Image (cartoon, rainbow, N blue to C red; front, side):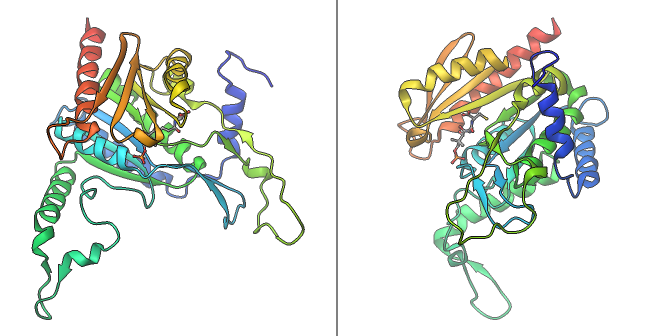
Length: 318
Ligand code: 9Z3
């Protein structure tokens, strides 16, 4: 194993070289460039900050024609709620999300009995049940406004291969936006994977006893993002632990190691009530407002992150 500058270039290069290429890469690049052009000072009428919010968990396929896979837990709620708050704060959002996970503006709609929202009073009209009218109206209006004003670009992924290739494309496309761009990395990214070339093509056969699989370590792309792909962007990563005793120590280590601007530390069981923003200026506990029943932790979290981003942009230009 050789590392030219200690960042693991060889591992990163071989990860990308051996990854199955993105099926719709040209279309993604074209959508990205158009979105960035519209929202950035360089080409568009508008001059907005642009944030890439990653959301949901990546899968690790065990077979090339994948039947089985390893998954990373994430409902996508954090990413979706954060996206809504960033749009409200005036940002354009590139929402890089796991297919099938929670979407911005749909969080307050009923999940399972979604079709229970609607009724047909006659054969030509569809109506929303009174109990859901407000939620459906807000969801439809907010989502349509965000898309119509080019504030929201949604790009789906499933596997770790797709996620990292798309993250690299986005970072490269955002390079010229410099300090006005942000990465908010809430996706739960696999730490281990089966390299594509050593993966069996067809479904692994069962019936011959236990299965041994050797997983390789996914190269740490965060260092690459910070050093090469988008060095001027403001960068927020997340740390998830189930043991609260080690959470802050792990987040502090990640802050130093990857030189991100802040690490949002959360514990699995309390993640919806409380997070800790760990940065070089100290640790800040962020909670939802206890007096407001509809308040969510992302309301206060995004307010804090946007403030920090403003300071970063100011410092950058002086
Ligand atoms: C997070 O920690 C997110 O806050 C959650 C959000 C995934 C917990 P939900 O989607 O949950 O609302 O259900 N994301 C990062 C998780 C992660 O895998 N972090 C890695 C680590 O902790 C670094 S990339 O080592």
